[in-house]
Image (cartoon, rainbow, N blue to C red; front, side, top):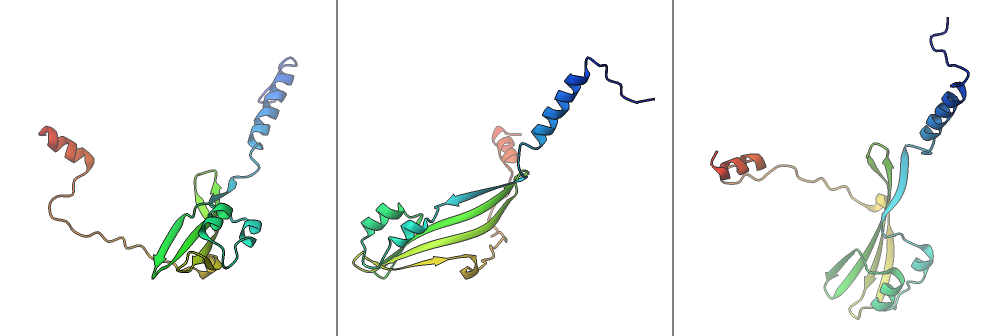
Length: 150
């Protein structure tokens, strides 16, 4: 004897419900979404940057840099592109990181440009120890209650 019996009138409705449920499950092609954070380095724009060009022209072609650096009369502009895979559960995984560095001479003209990837980078460990402070470490709730007098 079958455990679940559907009448002939409800069979098309049940079939449609199952099809819709399965379509909803397959609506997302995968559990991972790929996206780019920061600046997208375009090869055609990169080809336009040559030694001797002005900072204004570089800004017109590439846009405003994400980071700048000044050292002994020279400067550098940095454009960072990070390709990230995000899972359906909110986990971000960096797939690649590319840094376009444009170096300028003392006159504000392009001296050279360089493209760096993760393999040229260095991993820097962030110090997690805390510096002790004088006084008490209190949570927000403790501070709130002490201000009321409790």
